[in-house]
Image (cartoon, rainbow, N blue to C red; front, side):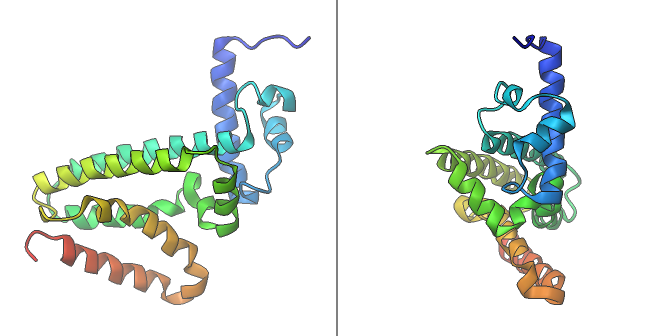
Length: 197
């Protein structure tokens, strides 16, 4: 019988699994990373993995949640920062978010499709509702700071981040024009969302 992990060991192993997942995602993606590769890198058995996460998809969701929490903290700091260029900085952050290690694998349409199929029923709807509520609160803060027009749709504002991810997924199609297109989109959004339009 295998020995049980102490609470400190559980916390350390869980953190190491999340780190291993973030590294593996960049190398092989969600779908193509076997659980055994993750467990070997942290020194636990495949069976022990399931005492930390019920599935490989649950690990990816935990990794994405941790990345999202970090991004939300950074975005909040931006919104609480200097008022000059606040909307522009906010939008640039959102469009660059998909290059972060925790989210970069979501740029691969096959990996994203695998993850969406592997999610438990209702998980995607729950995540979207949470994102919508969080971005609505962020929008309220931007409006209160005078960076965004008061009549901006919360639903449309919440859709900017996933739209930025979709655009990042299409980078292979836009090729050399990708950065210029993103720049045009950011400039257009700043003009449209600005209270002085």
